[in-house]
Image 1 (tube, rainbow over the protein chains, first blue to last red):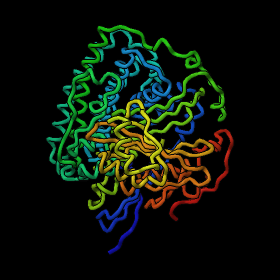
Image 2: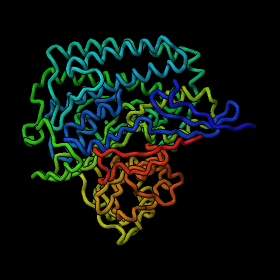
Image 3: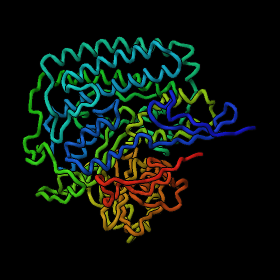
Image 4: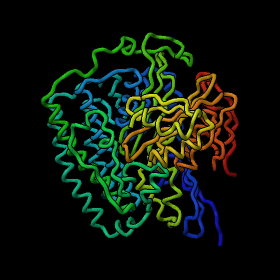
Length: 381
Length: 158
């Protein structure tokens, strides 16, 4: 018997970011784990208190660097509630379109990284290749591939360029065929199944108790998706199914994410059709003049600058690619938010690591943590 | 579920430890309570009102006092609810929620190090996002962004 603690991280192929998983092992068995976060803590919540409402959007893109749109949308919804602003309908459709393309992009990034952890090299290349098609679309209407700064309090920055919807449909057609290929590569591979089946099991009760959400919760048989349960933006008008599996293991999480990408295609086709037939404004027309101000006074005392605008508190929740994200924005009648608090889904998913890692082998840690889909940017903020 | 329903369910349990329930757009309501009623409120919220998920815990520094905000989700009502308690700035502590919802563990560690609110009987109250030995609480209003700080950081494990 020789028990010891080893570090997996902060630089380790398993981490997919910068964090440290301390593991207590006895031979090959995992006896205990202790995730150590904070290597990427940039104080986004603190910096937000020092910025104009629209300047916080820049930080949101950097919160989760593979799902920037989801975080922009999250913050915008809370800020609009705090400031009592309603966006026009076309802007909401454009936000949903961005969200869903982002979900595909994020899941493809996860797919590429996850299967590479398992030692399958070709799916990694395929996943990254197809994610680039989605990034090309982002570039076409936001000018950026990773940090978009597209959504604004009260709407979105600009419309999609002419011919964009047809181009987007071609990408969706291409992706539909690719999803079948991915499935054949993974579910048809004995190596994949042997490494993933019955691994990292986290049952529904434990998921709920430890705050685990998103694909991990749906893979445990709980049909919970904020797009259905608490529809924000225009998800109420859109027809789609919630992906679900029952095995609660790594394979089930893979199946849920694959199905989510198919459902995103379905949502996107409806949104693109709507965009073709409903031109309209991009921004709300009753915006206060100060919200359009390009520069806000800098300084921690900025909140002392009073303006005559109602105070308010905003709360929003969106189904981010990784799970349930929440934002709490306090507006105290200044040019800057008084306090911004975010709830990151991965934060809670990692906090439950002891529940789904202990009792397995050291070599099982990369596939299990891969199936969690870690994005450290949003954990540390 | 609406604010009145929450008040009706919580008033008999909490009595005057419940300060009131106000409507909050997009949620069942915001419950304001005295910190002495924390444990009873948490248990009632989970077992009677069926708020099985604790979504997040956050702290707000109001300079003269601090506020602890809890967000709950109920799978049966498909709704959020917000709980909020004020604690004095010079004696900022409240009972932990992690005995009722284990998911509170990390959220409370974060609120402890960033907003300087202590959680009584927390099983594992140590630094999460900031290094060990970090004596500042960055999310307090007294922490200025534009003034440099000096700090010697110790290694966590030697």
